[in-house]
Length: 145
Image 1 (tube, rainbow, N blue to C red):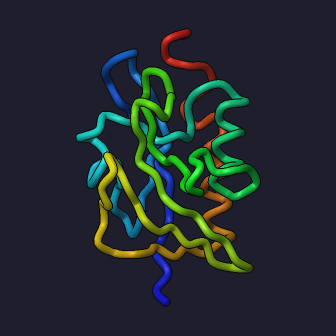
Image 2: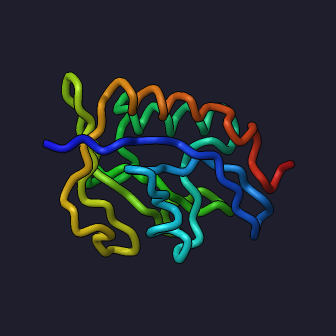
């Protein structure tokens, strides 16, 4: 099994409801935002919002919290105006074992976004990258700043 390199990159999205600094996901050096998400006008769920909001999303993505979809999927990009999943989301199934994290079924707008079935990451690096996003883009919601 080939492990992909998982990284986080601080990004800026301009637009409604205001500029948002967020933590973008990069897999093997390629931004998922640039590759799949710009057309949806979402931002990742990490690096912005209140401290509680950020902690909840970090916990979810390292499987210390429940998935936010009933089918077991976790949102990774969400609406920047309200963070409501009813506006749509890009989601993924996350599985973790002793040393590997697997993302599968990358989906947005009800469609599979990548023909690859799975991405595998080193667990220690993945958890470190995800947890490093706390406060990355600041605290607070753009519409309250």
